[in-house]
Structures are given as C-alpha cells and as structure tokens.
Image 1 (tube, rainbow, N blue to C red):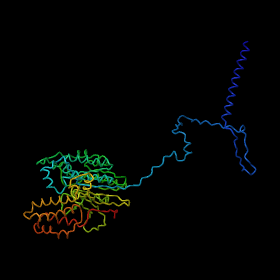
Image 2 (image 1 turned 180 degrees about the vertical axis):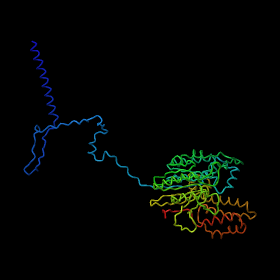
Image 3 (image 1 turned 90 degrees about the vertical axis):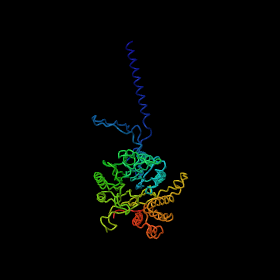
Length: 512
C-alpha cells in the first residue's frame, strides 16, 4: 500500500513538471516574432543568386546579452541620463536652440549739470525768498521743481543708457533738497535708466545752506560725504565696479566696451571750497583704472564737476581745477579724447593745446562744458556713440511749455516758458543795473538791460554772437555813452569775445 502511494505521488510530480515545461515552451513560441527572416546573400538578384527564405525554426534565436559587470567597484560610474534613442530619431529635438544674438547697441547718454534743485518745502515764497531770487545769477528758482519734472519726463521718453548729473545738484547742499531730489530721481531708475551722480562744490558741507520763511533766511541742515553717499548710493555708487577710497569718485561700466570715470573734484573736507581739485590718491586710483582700460581696449569717458581747461574770459577764477595740469597729463598719457564738466554755467567746447600755434588736427583732450540746467535756456547735453565708432554731442533745451500743456498746467509763465525766461533775465539785469545807474529813465534802462540780457542768454547757451549787430544796437550805444567804464559793459565785451563760434554741437570721428 505504501509502495503504491509513493508511485502515485511520483507520477503526480512528473505530470506537474511536464505541464510547466509545456507552458514554458508555448510562451517561448508566442514571444518569437513570426514570419520568415530574409537572409541576404552576397549575390545580386537576377544574377542567379536569389535570396532564399530560411525557415523560422532553423534560424538561431537571438537573446539579449547581459551588460558586462564592472571588474571592480571603483570602475563603476552611475548613469546620469535616461534613454537617448529618441534623440537620434528626432534630429535636433534634444538640443536647445541657440539664443539669437542681439545686435550691439552703442551707449547713449543724457548729461546735465548744475540743477541747483530747491524743494518747494524749503521756502514759503515770502520776502526772504524773493530777495534770494532777485540776487541770483539767473536760476529759475521759483520753477525748479517744474523744470526738473519736465526734464525727467524727457529723459524717460528718450531712454538713454544713463543719466549723468555732474554736480551742484542742489541749491546749496540742503539736506531737504538732497532727499527730495533723490526721491524724484527714483522714477528714472524705475524706468530702467541708470542715474550716475557726483557732487559739486555746492553739495556737501556748504555753509550757505538755507531755507526761506517769512522775512528770514535761516541756516539749514547740510550733508557730509557719508550722508551724500547714503542718499545717492543707488545712483552709481553701489553699481560701480571700482570706487576711490578717498573721495566720492567711482568707475561705472556702461557695457563691456565703454566705461564712465565719475570724478569727485569738490573740496569739502574739512570745509567747503568753491575751487576744485583731484586728490593725489584719486589720481593714482584713476591711473590704475585707465591702465586696465587700455589693456582691455575699453573706451573711457571722464566726467567731473570742475573744469579741466580755462574756458571763459568772463569767469577767470575758481573754475578750472587747481591741479588741472596734472589731470591733463594723466588723461593725455592714455590719449583720452573727451572730458565733460559743469560748474561754469556756460556751454563751452575747447580743445587742449600744449602751446599756442599747435594745429587743430593734432591730438589734445577736448573738454565739453555743459551749461547749467537751472539757468535759461535750461539746456542739457546728449551724447551718442555711432556705429562707425564716432561720438556725436548736441544740446537740447527742456521743453517746459510742452510739459505744462501735457499736464494741464494753467500757469502762463510755464505755458510760455521761453518768453518768460527772457523777460525774467531782463528784469534781473534791470534791477541789478538800477544799483549802478541813476536817473536815466525807464526806456533807456530797458534798452540797456535788453542788450545785456540777449548777450547773456546767448553766451550761457553757447551760441555764436553777432558782435556787429550788438554794437550797432541802440541799447549798446547807451552803454557806451552812459557807462563806458562799467564792469557790466566789460562783461558784455568778454561774453561776445568768447562767442565767436557755436558750442552746441561736436562730432568726434576718432583719434587723428
């Protein structure tokens, strides 16, 4: 009985084994691809060597080979990508397309100087303020806020690479004026236009800082160099690639080909001075920047508040930097073509000559002085790099009237700003002449002041003055007859002598 039982168990196991084997064989047949496999012969069809069909059961079964294992653990490297077959099937689909190269756009700059900004909160329009205006040098003090807003609108519409403000940005360095100006400039920065600022002699530690309320002119809070940086740090200082440790000078890259050298020529430590000077340590820092630029083939444009050259027969002191010879030598060591400044309040263009008689075509650094934005005709400069490597400079007057119309302003002075500006200057001159001239009558006074005002405005604007036309005018003849030795007549002569050509346009076409 036991023997029969064991036989039955053995037969059952054998049946199970055979059943499993059969299932595996059937699965293998199912998994094999059907159809004949065509074996290529070395012969060509039609030449007696046709291809022959090979029965499926007689072809060798291809089995996938297992990947070879690394010989040692240190030979193993993880696979950092997935299946790549699709890359070959869809040509280029796996390679991100190259970004189209943007054509190079040369820089474009707006340059303005001597804003002498005055906050409306710094005065109440009273007696003290009126006296301040009457003794000014022609700044449109009562409309400085509106002038600034019109100017900033034009800058934003123009969309330059940067707005460069080269000093005397406030009336006399009042902290309230600095803070408000910085706030107003923010909308230019928010429009994607970098503002670049340096101080002038009016801006730091200025003992003339004042506010005007009622009958009193009261000393106002000023700023020192550290506070100036804190107020304007986002307007060039924190964006600079290099800063001078001993001044508020810095170097800013407009792009990979062009740098701005923003130079602090003001003297305010320990006390504020009108005269300008670059420190010896600043000159050493500049030398390093210029050497680096020369090595890299970078164009450098230097800007300072004070003048590099003696530019005026009328203003002969306190304008050119005290050590301008050293500065000129440094710039010419690296053959810089252009230098920009302000301070003079007069639009001037002049080339440095080592000595009289040097031909104009010979190399010498050329200085462009932009006239004060705060004095009629309220101009600024526009500098544009051209595709051929040249640089073009021209001035533009702020169109305050267009701004007033666009903003619904009803003030007639602003709606007819150019005409108001002339009458404003004429009245200032008349009032000042009144302190010199006695008993000439209103008509003669008006004629004389009108001549001075026209010459004055043309001179500040950098226009060519027709001396013959001026001298033949009735107003000039009144000057010669009544005040032949007056300093005011000497000023008329000096302004005309300086204005033998137009100073509002310049094209630099490359080094001679």
